[in-house]
Length: 487
Image (cartoon, rainbow, N blue to C red; front, side):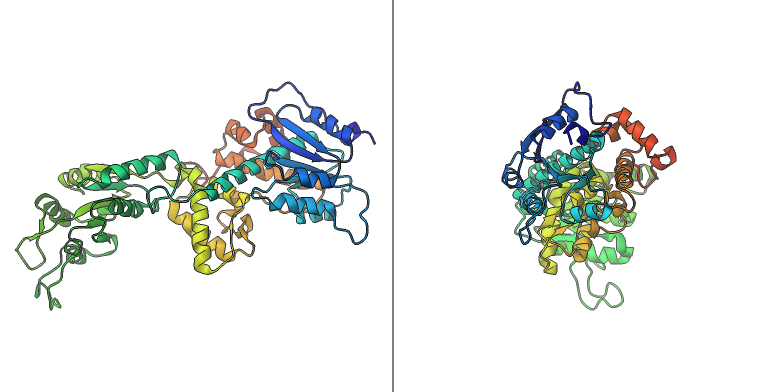
């Protein structure tokens, strides 16, 4: 058997394309020195192959920090009875590193049960010989992306999950801007309006401003008017005098008085009735309030931070929100980005919530698998950070291993995950099924844009078109649903 005969009909590829990124460092573990030379030519640019001819050398070489992917020939001479399987030892060694190295295996044995057994031992992928180099490149690129993601995740784990402002998490540019704004406004006495979609962490920002301010040793009062009738809201905020209404047997201070010298966080201020907007405006202008049943002004010294997910400017034009109050509360404005616009923060947030809930539920979960993080990063998160927190907790409760994996995801996220199971049918049917899942996931992520999908998959657009035709992926299948499109 010659080295060239171990490559299929599509074994020779063009070697003219220039690499657009650093070469992928591939360790090939194969007893045949010449095969590595042939494979290096077939793969072309973009790959740097290092060859070792024994599994023992492969185990040792896999410990190096510069190995991105391992290619392992599964067809070694019969093992001695009672001795350990060195191939499995290599798989275990590669997966035990702080950043697991994916191992791709190839074999002449085309039995499905053999492929399943190899996958069960921890292989990233299994290929039949002779090798289809296009399929091998496709899997190599996918494994390489997995390695990069695992390294990013490892770096995130090594970093403190907090910013320099306790309570806020994220290292994206948009969050760095939020930290700057919080730092600047914390030291001055002015009202702040925090805007953002539901679940983006508006109260966390308000608490961060309070903790950084000269009022940090005073009370922080949070209140949302959205769930209470108008009369109860007025009583909660301004308090009442004895006899002000039936059942008022004694005087009571409201939230503003209780927070004297501190900060009041008024959530969803867009839900405040016009009559209460007038009373709130008086508090801000005159620094006094009147309890229910009294006309005696009570001095108040509070800082007000408001939040909303509504368009207050439109409400002002429609007459449902007072313009003068809007100007008072929006002296300094902070706009929080939705989670889908700061996806690089998802690993940090996921790791933080994972550790938090592992302690709460007494589970031995040490982190998130790269596949789990990849799925989180491809989701749109309509519920933002609050929804992510919920997903992490649900997944952690379901998890049986030491890492959260795609199998632990709730049903609504599982369609976004590329299955790691070996599908039924022939080996090539399994490969086609897997490729179809990856292609559809990429196309739907990019709203059907084939150029962007091809870039994400690290393949050419022309090759993507050939795969669409070969795998019979129709335009109707590609077109994303309303829930799948980007906002």
